[in-house]
Image (cartoon, rainbow, N blue to C red; front, side, top):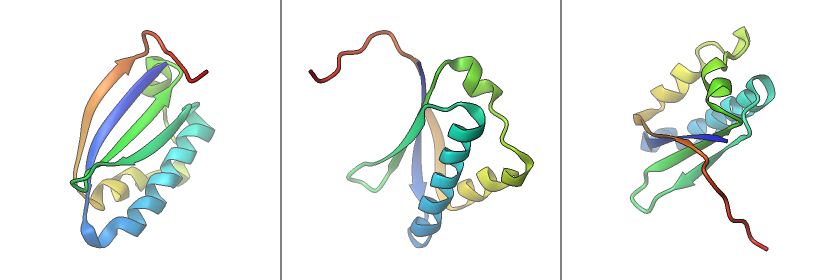
Length: 98
């Protein structure tokens, strides 16, 4: 598994459109690119963390959404004050709940 994370500051007046746009893109990456899913997490200071899971780096790098999604990523980033990639990680090991 390959994980990519982003730290995001959403414009205060754009939270609702951000949530809708983020979900649309996450579902498209799952349905068209083979993403294993995405999580949107909130930090106490209002920063959001986007956590994307991919089968491997190749799937992440090869992701190209269909034409009807063109511009949606730009729209998503436009709803934010900042959008910074914070990590690209390869899974080494896992322990799950029993």
